[in-house]
Image 1 (tube, rainbow, N blue to C red):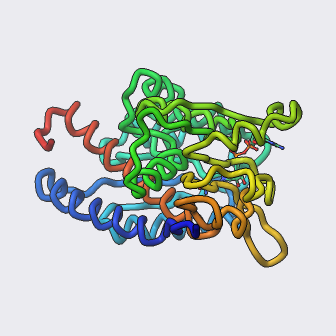
Image 2 (cartoon, protein in one colour):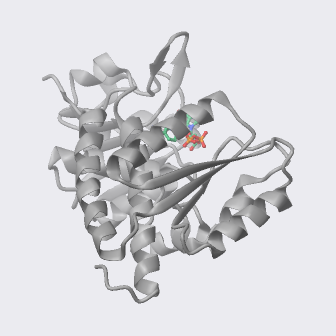
Length: 293
Ligand code: NAD
């Protein structure tokens, strides 16, 4: 068996094409395209690369995208003040805070000042809470990208054993809710699962395996159940190359579907940010009474 490779760039392109059509339709009805702002404090090379890919995606889809760069010595209070102004501005439909932030600013605190209906990254506590209640209109981008990859396989999740390795706030935990929403039977593994020597046993049961840890080759190919769907979220720099958390060549021999790293989950994540922006825009328009949907 040789796994079918899930091409993230091709999937991202299909999703962008669909969003472009939706934005053109919305813009025609409302007279304006969604406007998203990304607030960056200081400048950081990696962050700028991510911002560039956001701008490219936004330009393609027809979304207005702005990067606001604040001085490196901006205080937490000043940043919150800026967020409040964007919250109050009816012509701003989505807001995100770019990471990394200077150490004195706490992302978990400032991100929660973003208006729930403008929360581009879907990490606001209210939006996480809504996910538990089954409202998945605005959701964290990486879990959303994982779900799109699974959807692209055409394999239904109902009754399947879905195993997530990694229980972070931004990937593993929200992903477990999205999988539950689709009636998968969900197991979430983490560092203590490995410490207990039980990671292999859980991985070996997975019809759908998602790994988000940040450790190269944590999952040897031989552990993977034959015919599984394997989504590798990990990003690990090894010299000049980037690898995931799954032994790619080994997994290829056993899985039915497998995401590459790079070129798997990453390219879809930025499109999910745009999708959140469009959902945010629709929610704001409907609360203002505009009939757009
Ligand atoms: P994190 O550091 O917040 O969490 C790591 C998780 O891995 C924790 O649940 C921890 O318990 C678990 N873990 C650590 N060692 C383990 C072990 N030996 N066995 C089993 N579990 C173990 O990580 P994160 O922020 O969720 O990121 C995880 C990886 O995903 C990183 O490589 C990150 O770069 C990548 N990532 C990719 C994207 C993307 O869009 N492609 C987005 C976010 C994160």
